[in-house]
Length: 519
Image (cartoon, rainbow, N blue to C red; front, side, top):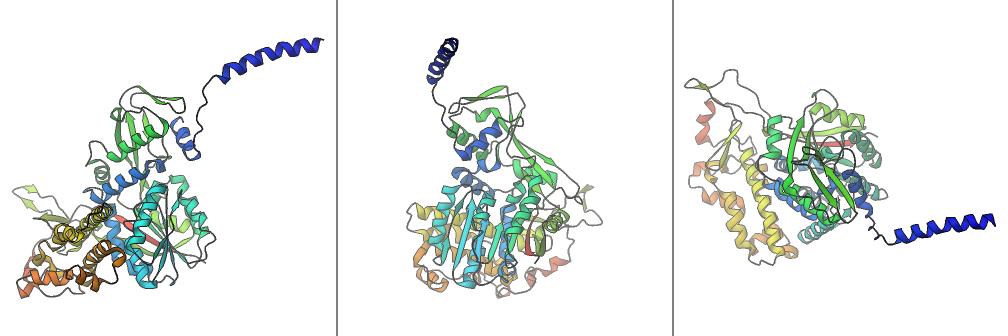
């Protein structure tokens, strides 16, 4: 009897609790891929995983920013390095190589590698790995339309998940990790990641790693902050967060802030950028979808990366030590030439004032270097043209039919600007790099109808860029064909080479590291 009473008295409050809690609305389950976002936002050090910034729209905005920016030059430097050293990069790869890229994004810098491998082996499988699944699927479809012999197998997910996914594939691999994306990985996770990459590659494979070597504080801060009152990429992140969680985060009450932390160049820890949103006032953000509230104090930071580093900047010592400690052997190491500089022994004075030294200057749209070469001018033309080719692809997607007129009026003319000044001093390699712009344009315009460059320019009523430049030049003295030499000014200008040359502040540096594997 006593037991029955106890059970009855215990059951009543249980039933009351059940009725009370069964009336509460069910909180939607958080998708597995967003759980880390919630835990990051509610942690003591509030932050968001770096990958969360790269939804489809975020990836598109980022691509637009890095290709058009006048201060953030990493994209331009890296693309130029790839074009310049492409034969060294692919030259020793087996004929059946598979191309794999971690953090591929728009694959905009990958095209020179794709073209070189297709030319070398006839057909190619390319596996882009990126967190923005829908975005890389769209990019993959565009690439397959542009290159008939290319098969693209996009993998939507994290870097190492993509590499593990390919573990059973027997093909030799050329693995790309460009755009300084590796520098966004937490510093304490960089070496373990490199070791796992090494463990998953075979002796026949190669690993091409792009790293940012600009450690000049002023240049770095300017690169990240100079062009925007508000960064549209970070505003998109807030829009993305509000949409995913039905949140009410107000982008106007958070300020984009950049710091630079310098570490000794001869140590193993790289310098790095810290980027975060700073709350301008005490405020509360509600994630209504989850019933979660996040309080921010005035001045509190929301970091845009898991660790302290948003983007690492390396010295050559640090790059080589990283390769050594992860059991890679350095097979090639390339740095953009415009980063190299020295200081004259005597400053140049004008009316008692020291003139600022520069490595290059722009004169009516032509970039003139202190060593009287045209590397920078050609690089700038190629970078500008590549940004415009991206527009050409977009116009084709939207159904614009007269793309040849767009190309000749908008892109072709830019490649001809001031031709008599620099044409005669182009190296053969520079001339070929410029010609590839028109070749890519032909592939975009003709799509699956493209068979060869010679046929394409005849079909589109174009001529080669070299022939066009020669026809523009009026003086035979300036119209000599591009040489395989050093690329100095035309001989008509050689008297300038005796003038004092003032050398520059460092221009932001980037480096490419390709690694062979220790057996």
